[in-house]
Image (cartoon, rainbow over all chains, first blue to last red; front, side, top):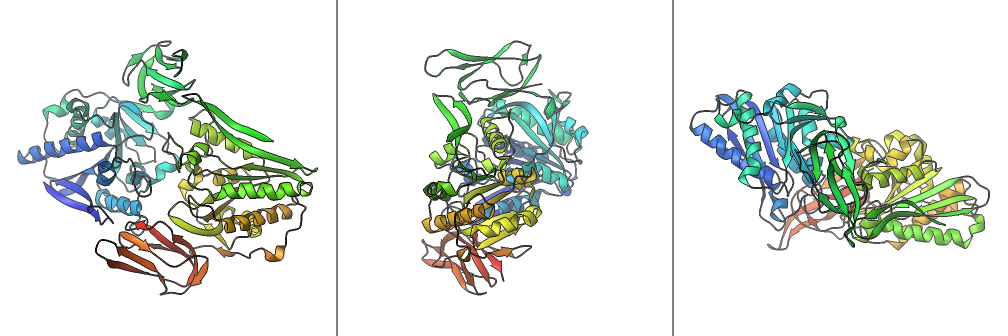
Length: 309
Length: 308
């Protein structure tokens, strides 16, 4: 393992801003993995830390296949995490809206550029992602449709779902999209809550990454790579039934992401915050699996509460 | 008449609403709209909305048509000093044309488009953010320049910036309206969280001049005192970004011609008591943007110059 300084920048009042990369093996640039890009993606960072430890162990046992390089970057944004901010604190910008970056541009464009220089030209790219919506997803691989997407490889993760979505204008400045434009097969992994750093909560994703590494021929067969793999279902984001809050109030969720529901089953109640009356009950419009749930105690009217597959 | 164009209930006993003031007189059918407050930290438009209505109401008989003023498209943002939409972590000017069946933010955006779409002219007033001080200017994308520059010239600004198209800008209010045939001009002036009265008065005069040229305002506007703007097209804008992190200290001001090699300021270290970098203008030109917020990181924008 080589620990590499990928990018650094002096700050006016704080320690030097640094992005560290962990390289395993050498040869073909086979896989790059990026953890936290936002300050609240602690779980994403923790998954990468566990992966670094696992790869270190595999490397010492000679179980990584020679001729391949794997790069893991647990954090591209330690500064925001250290002060409890989601985005770049000085100007509120999001590094994941700055790709491919610009080395002579604004601060977060420079960070994105420094990061992208280090992670482009790999065969596979994985981002441990989080959505702008505050909620829990059933574990899935998400691919932005660019015309270059590779769905078959996405199945190798063995997660329950592979979700394809049409790009929106802002996708063009995100990592997943730009990786693909630069010929990397790019996957964003979603699942669980950003602040869940229990071993149990993150272990499935660590196993998922090790499974992918194994199935792509980058390691010898690993016990945790073959356990509990799913036959992924490929779905289009447009197929998900989206359910919005019919009223505003205190949100009482009755189901969790991953639950199976039947048509007519109550999914949530919205409660009057003054008189404890039920303002609205949200029922499942069809049989299916809960793909996404909002995880906030309050619901705004029309806010997306659930996605059902 | 004050009208509500969108409203919805918030969770705990409060109604969220976006409002406009409709002022109609005469028999003219044209509709002229002034919108502002998309970003909660940009306040220049608040004074302009006030002053424009004061001037129009003084001589309401000279109005021939409809003036509609929407001071706050993001009222919760203005009310809480939040640039984006509180609760959503979203820049409102990145979600247009919105979605009538989406979140509150998307529904609000859709309602705004729906309400503005038949206007004969929309002026979308932005300040800069808190970081940059801007001369009053009109920003126009290359695709709409031919149609919009003649209108923009009437607005009494010193500068018109015709810029290249960026995909992300497709989700702005101006792009959404222009793409459905509603002429929309984006105005930027001043600095975030402050009101510059001189600039505000200058803009109101420009807006009334444009209204007069469209026959909505029958009053006299002294056209000889309207600024003849510099029009910047192609690659004429030079960006000066901070070469180092520190405190940007400057005694210079924008709205003037500077020479190549002139000082734009210094990046200093308050701890070491030293100058980290002297910032020198890389070209001769019209300085239209200068950094207002002193703390800067490597890459922070310090100045923009239209090269001459």
